[in-house]
Length: 466
Image (cartoon, rainbow, N blue to C red; front, side, top):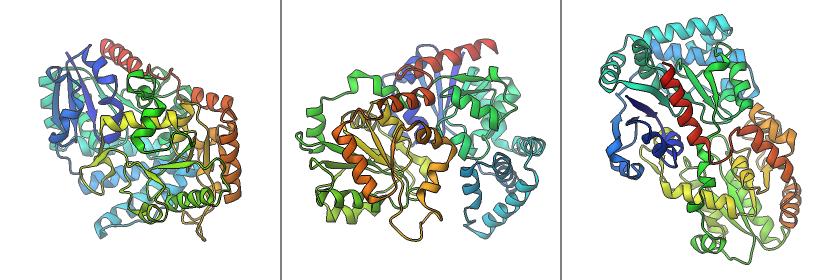
C-alpha cells in the first residue's frame, strides 16, 4: 500500500515537498508523486528520500470544448449562488482571448447565471464529471492506480482543472481521495472546487464553516482541521539565522530598523510599484522616523520589471526577489519554489520590524512572528485601477474582514496615515499584539509547526477507513 500525492503547481510544492510533510509521509508509506515540475528541478525536493519516492508527470490533459464550457459554467453558477464581493469581482472581469475562448466564456456566463442554485450546480457537476469521465486520460490514470494500489490519494490544491481526470479514475476504483484547501481566501473568492473529493483538509474551524457554507453537500465528518504546512518552517529552529547574519545576507545596516514591503501580483495589486515609491519618498523626506531601511519582496509570480524605475530612483531600496523559478513564462502555476526561499522567508518575517502590504496573506506570515502590519488602503492613480477605491474593494472581501474587524493590522487610507501607522509601530511594536494573536488563532487552527504531522495522521485515518 502507498500514498499518492498530487502536486499540480508551485504552491503545492512549497507546502508539501519543502518542509517536514514529505519526510513524515514517507515514514508511513512509499509515496508516489504526480507533478508538473520539470525533471531538472526534482532533485531539490527529494530531501534524501529518493528510495521511497516515485515521481510521475501528470498525463497531458486537454479539455474538450464541451468539458471546458461545463467547467466554466459550474464556476460561474457557484459564484452567482455564493455571491460574495470577491465573487462578484471575478464575475465582472472582461472576457479576453481567442474568439473560441470568448465564445466558451460567454456561453458559460449565461449558463452559470441560469443554473445558480444548489440543484443547478449539482446538475452541472454531474454533467462535467460525465463528460470528463469519457476522456482517455481517466482510463490511463486508472491503469496507473491499479499498479500503484494506493491507500489514499491526497491533492495539495483543490482548484487546478488538471486534477479532475485523476480523481474520477480514483472514484471508479473506490480509492479514497482528499484535498487540501490551500489558501484562506479560496472558498470565499474563487469558483467551484475542481473535483469531487471524498475528504477536505482545512486550516481551521473558521474555514470549516466557510466550506460548509459554500459546499453544503460536504458533511462535517468529511472535513478535517489540520492547520497549514506553509507556516511549519516558521517553527523550525534549524532554519533560523541570527539578526546579525540575516542583515549581513541582505546587505542591511544592523543599527537601523527594517521595513518589509510585500508585493502582490500585477493583476491584483497593480499599484504596488507606486506604493513602494510612496514609502521610499516618505522615508527620504524624513517623515518616517528612525531612518528605516526597506526591503522589497515581490510576489513569486511577478517578474519584478515594474519595480525597476523605483529601484533606479531609490538605490537604497533592498530588493529580494523570491527564489522561485518561472519554468513556463506567463503561467503562474508553473512557478516553483526553492528550499532556500522558504528559509529566507522564515527569517524575513522574523527580523523585519514592520510589514507593509496590500491585503496579502503576508499579514498572517508576519502576525505569526508578532510583527506589526500596515495595509495600504489608498490609491495613487485616478481613477482607481480596480474600478473603486482600495478601501472599498479588497478590505471588503470576506476573507479579509476578520483582519479589519479584529484590528490585527492598521490601514493606511492616505499618505499621512501611512506615516502615522508606520511611526506608531516603530515606536511600539507591541501595539495590536493581542489582535494579531487572535487573528492567527482564528485562521490557523493547529499550532504552528504541527500541521504536517496532523495531515499525515488524518490521511492514515482516511486510508484505514476505506
